[in-house]
Image 1 (cartoon, rainbow, N blue to C red):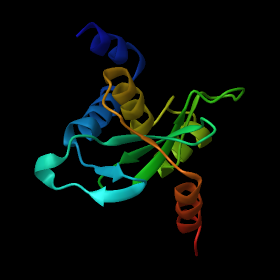
Image 2 (cartoon, rainbow, N blue to C red; image 1 turned 30 degrees about the vertical axis):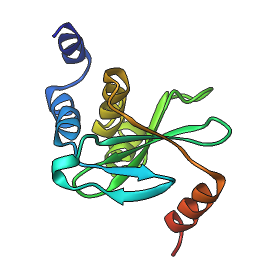
Image 3 (cartoon, rainbow, N blue to C red; image 1 turned 45 degrees about the vertical axis):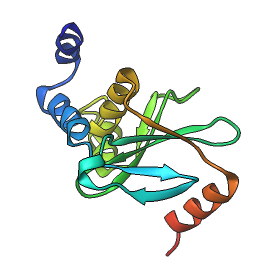
Length: 137
């Protein structure tokens, strides 16, 4: 309860509600032996997946209603501590400076704090396949 009041001191209600809605929707994919697998609605439990590379780099995948966005938190030696691949982050944070973060970054930070992230170690083979699929034209 107190934490929610602190969030309201910093962020607009619309951003907090959007982030909490992402977590509450609990849409998700789980990962089994480095392969994404569909999770039926009655087994869905999480919206944020934490992926850790063999060298310890961490990225988060956040499922929204239209896409999966990649979120980075705790970025070292940068002007901002978080980054998201969504268009809203680019516009409201980077271009106009209207907000400190998008709903995906806030949802990720909340999921981390609440222990709601699905964690996975990813292999080099999975990483190579994932990157090639992500940037394939």
